[in-house]
Image 1 (cartoon, rainbow, N blue to C red):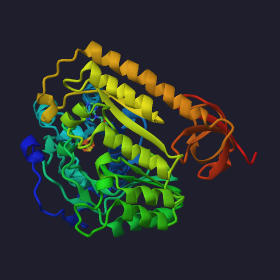
Image 2: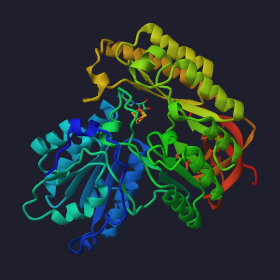
Image 3: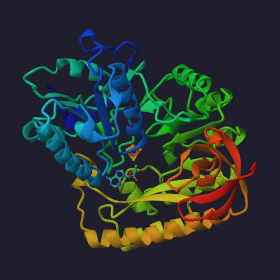
Image 4: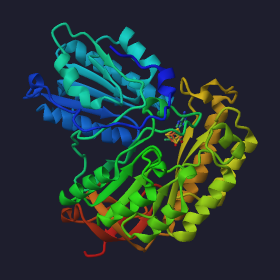
Length: 473
Ligand code: 5AD
Ligand code: SF4
């Protein structure tokens, strides 16, 4: 048993990350353990977790399990959890109740709890004390050891908790079963060293560790061979890519090398304004296959609050970066994240946030009420804003954000845009995909266009999506 520890999770040394290439293996005893059995995986949270679940799925299928989308039919139930805000946490705890029910009616069911919540000291202790029936608790650093944990399960069904609070290594060679045949997530780095005061990620995912450029390029080349059209380069803070490698090679170099592979579309998330260089902007502008869309979290429009958040930029610096991006790429769409109700946020601070939204008119903004996370510096700050005030601020902000989202979308009416048709739309008889600027489009078209980048004429727009018709038809 190995429980996580917040103090250890905080440590950052100058040690270089170790790349491990042979750490994933399947013990003989579990080689066919999943034969005729099903696994169910539920994923909460960000793209990083979604991609981790693609790894976990591939591991399960390596053990011969088949995926089921019906939890009631599963022999193994896996919850891949998120710790970013209290509401994600509450959803998972609610789901555990349902899983418990199934486990009681069929004691043979194996349950796995993993992801960022497992990395939280309090949660793992709670699972140990109150949820003894959860068979395996593993953290974000040791997904690749799942076959070993499954091989350790025996008659007495003793709970196995192994969560490491470490800076972390880079594990290459974990298999992946991608959800899409056209778009792929590609990790370029793990962890984060920014320590924004509200954020739990540097504690749950360890220090910043960049994968080697050649490993990333190889993965992209293999994806091209497999017919993929789009890659999204993934990291908590992609602009800092390479800083820990000491090879004088950064995100601008990586973007250029990925662009040169010739893959149709390249995206990247998430950017931190601090590390966004002019070189990077120039590379994005230079290559047609790097999509003109940047997710650039601002978090607050008040420089005072940004300082308390340890974001390392002022409102003016953010605006100047935003304008520079638009100067090189006038049509680049820019989305953001905004937190309201950070401890001590006054009406004036909140007004600064509204002002900046009015000034920059983001294409899209993901907005959140501040949620204290145990162990983070902000959780110790005096939080004297009532929930009612926070909700009112969120509501006011959302109205503004939605107004600009719709306004930006209206510019697309009657325009022809390129859309990668990637799946069936929620709307009947339609397919969906995204423009290069990351606008969701529901397209009336034939199934044959799946996996193709096609010209679509926009016929109608809403706040969150657009409708279009294919130009060929
Ligand atoms: N409370 C509210 N929102 C948060 N985020 C991160 N931590 C918190 C928190 N404690 C938001 C930030 C980040 C996004 C992924 O989630 O806006 O950019
Ligand atoms: Fe969290 Fe800040 Fe790191 Fe983003 S950059 S993951 S908000 S600490």
